[in-house]
Image (cartoon, rainbow, N blue to C red; front, side):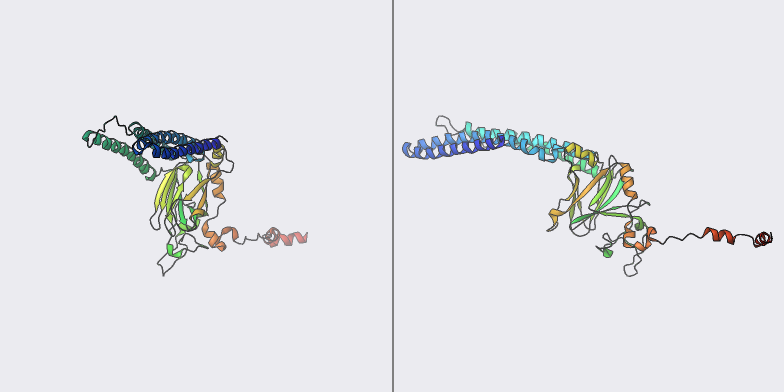
Length: 369
C-alpha cells in the first residue's frame, strides 16, 4: 500500500510540473521572448532539483523493495563466495559513492548556475592539474578492484586441496551430466566418437575398437554417472572438471557465487567449499522449497532457459550412504555383467553330501548288527 501511495504522489507531482510548463508557454506569449527564456530557465532549474530529489528517493525505495529478492540478501553458500561478496560490496560502495556525488553535483550545478543577467560567464577551457586528478584517481581505484578480482580468480582456479572430492560436469543441450570416480578414485577415459545419448552419454571407453584404435579402459567400469542432480559435501572442497558435449555452456552456481565456461574439447576447472547443507539453507532463507541451482549462463540454443540442474549439499555421512546405493554406469549399459544380476549358485543337498561321505564299511557293520 505504501508503494502505491508513493507512485501516486510521484505521478501527481509530474502532472503539476507538466501544467506549470504549459502555463509558462502562455506566459511567454504575453511577456515576450526574453522574459520567457529567463522564466523557462528558472523552471528548468527547479525541475532539475525536483528530478534529483525524486530520483534519489526512487533509488532508495527500489532498493528497499527489491533487495530482499536478490542473492545478496542471503549469505554466500561457499567460503570462496564470501570473498566474491566482499569484492562486490567494495565495488558497490565505491561506485555508488561516486554515482551519488556526481549526480548531486550535476543537477545542483544546473540549478545554481542557470542563466542570470547579473552574472558574467567564466570560461574554463583547460586545467592540467584537474585532468591529471580525474584520470589518475579513477585509474588507481580501478587497478585496486582488478587486483582483488584477479587474486580471487587465481585462487578459485588454482589446484584444489588434496582432500577435495572431484566431480566431472558435462553440459549438453539442454541439461547436465555429472560423473564421480568409482572405488579406484580414477576417472576412466572417454572419446566423443563413441557417445550414445541412450546408453553412453559421455562416450566412456568400454570396449576395444580396432577401427577407432581404442582399448577398453577398466577405470570406466566403476564410474558413477548422474544427470541433473549433483551431490557434494558440506565443508569439503569440491573440484569441478567442466566440459561440454556440444556447444559452449557455462556452469553458473549463483548461491555459491561461482561460474565457469564449459567448452567442447577444452576442460576447465574450479573449486569451492560449500558452507551450508541444503536443509540448513532452507532455514536461512525461510524457504522450505529452496534448492541449490546449477544454471547455464551462456546462451546455448532455444532450450537455454530450461537448462537447470540441482545441487544437493549434504553431510559426509549422508553422501557416503547415497554413494553406496549408486551403481556404476557400466552396469546400466551392460546389465548382464552386473554381479547382482548373475544367477546365484544352488546350494548342495547337505543330507546327500553327508551320505556320500560315510564309509561303506561302517554301513556294513551297522547292518550286521
